[in-house]
Image (cartoon, rainbow over all chains, first blue to last red; front, side, top):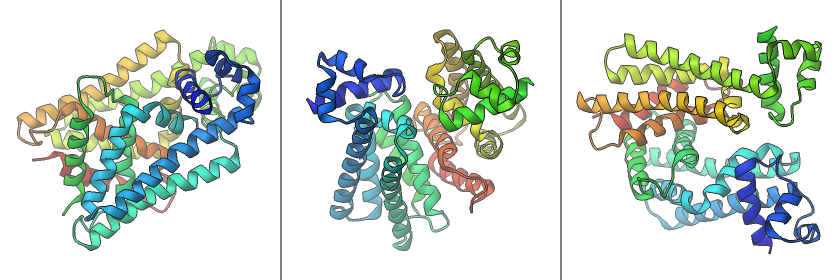
Length: 186
Length: 186
């Protein structure tokens, strides 16, 4: 049931926004009582926080595995870009709600999520910095700016890319890695 | 007065979102009556549309001038990226409201804005396509995907770049053009 509430809420938040979606909308769409909702989540904000936490914790875990298991920094960066692009099909709605509705979290919750988001970005920054030390990446680039550039390319895809359209996620990932690596590698 | 209403509204929309900002919030912040607001805008949605129109029309005009006056496609692309990065200081709030609040436009208004947004992107796509014909840009890249990549890098900057922080817009534009051009040019 918790998963059902989350899934339906993400659909509704994506279509009509967090502010315009009431708990009643969510329970009506599922055909359950408000009591059922409150059994799992104390408030709509708590549900939004759960969505944010789940999304970023999962990304951080998978990022960590890539960094542990894969050799060169170029390969690590490639795997992370692939992960983000291939996620669009499965996690697209999740990610769009995550990007758009951040400001509706309470201040304490927002702080926690922002720290985790920063960690994901800082790991990429560190990866680029280390790749500069090994000579894989161009020394003249500012790692901080390049990390934002890589995330700009991938995150923006969540706004426009339709995995069911005429271009495949494989093509998108291959083109974007070619583009990014040409821009970054020595 | 129209400019004052627009300026204050953009500040409020950016801080608390379009849905949570009432016409009363706007008129109170300005110390004017609601009548004054309605003299210039029939509704809050009309004001949002005015913000969207003004922003995209201005970008399209400046893009057109760049395309008319500047020689190679590489130079045109450079000028457009510079325009978008240097705008962050002056037009940052405008752009963030523009990106975030699109879904609150009426269907008819959204259609008009989407067409103009597409035109801006399609001109970049065409620029990359033509640059492939002249041999300036790599033939194996899909122009549509590259246009989105360039806009991803620049648009994402509006979310995080602080022109008053420790990095200048000049550095950002230079780094991003080096990154993008390495990725695209032959």
